[in-house]
Length: 282
Length: 358
Image: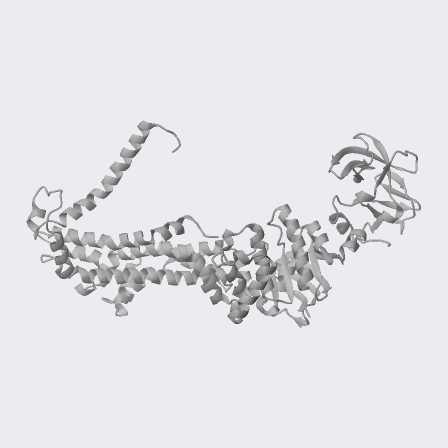
């Protein structure tokens, strides 16, 4: 803002502070709850300053889960979630960058048709096609396997579309210069297209990692054994049904743990991520 | 060795019912070591022709031979050519050195030799201090030189230039023109250079090809093209300001143009419907308003420093004369007499636009 109006500055800042507090307060409550004992967390109203059971609670969930709900160790779930998020993110990027390369740089019959078919699948998110997908996964014996957790989520029209749009902005002259230099299509892909897509890949990785990490409905259907639970599922299973009181301090500890990896990925890749969304290196 | 032979080259886009023919049978022989410029207005097919020589466009008809080998079905990399693009097409993520070395690495040339060749090219082009930089850290002129360096290190039979100077400012363009000339003098590699700028064409070419609407209008040295244009198109395209062209009818010692009978200093090479051409610098202005003179009604003047352009109307045609700035000159609204020496009159057939007579 160019204007200098002290009063408006105060208003603006107040608005921002309120908005940030609104978003952060639930996270703070979750953190406080995760540091309390079982009795403290059930006391109404719950205290709003951290208690003394931080390490104890976290060690507890990592190793044994909850005594009242699911007792699957959260450590195992974190590993499952990590595998799932990584395979989905890397798989999506690998497949879509290759298909986008084919669509943009090769002239094969029905090229446009293929592109539109991929594009149309944008209208079919996981939730819409979940029953047939489940049927196929079950018939293939993929229930309770990592393949079953990840494969149906890997195909990605969004990433293919984004890479296609990016490739279209790469001047044709690069491809022509590479042809004159004697680089075949794969060489051109490896030496020119991949390095130019670096920032886009980073940005997509962050988005897809979070997408994979936060999957709920599909892992819920496709996993039955505790050893295959992902963290997000684990949180839900820790809350026992019926009249039994949930161990909220442990549930909240798991929730905080579940929030960490996406945050770490965003922080680590922030520089590239912003670059990929904002500018193109040309 | 690096001679290029174009035989009846045609280019058609699209298929039969909606085919769009953009090049209609171009034939030319370019000798080894020659520097040939292809010039023409935009859309005349000159870049398409060059891209067909490079192998970036398919050849719809005819044959292209480079160094005694028909290359119609060869990939660009197999044609032993190197190309400089208008926007340079330097790989943005590679250093200057890697940009120049890339093609050599793909050809599996030993790395010591790559280094030697790149260093040599960098020395010629004064790029040695920039070898580690990325293209975006270079100025336009330096990028242009890197693009030429990438072509030089390949040591090809033929250099192809696709308007390589059009992204430079005027001063740099003149300087680079001289550098290209000097470079060609040293390397003597056969070169095809496409441009829409007639000054570039005139200054660089040993021979030039003037193209219009997918046809070759004339091929010859800059002197020939300037002094003996083969068609009215060439006459109007080469030279600035362009040649004055008067459409009319020649009979004996008279030429009737726009209802005005102009007495001729010598008989036209042929009677009938002709186009008469006179270059502005060959027009002499006088005050002899007798019946033997051509009256020019002066409309405007332009002072360009060393010379002065006189715009006027002769009969009903706009007519330009170029005077030395030291000469006496008329005012707007004056009627002056103009005449030209018989040797400076060009004659073209009105129907075919082809040159008539010597």
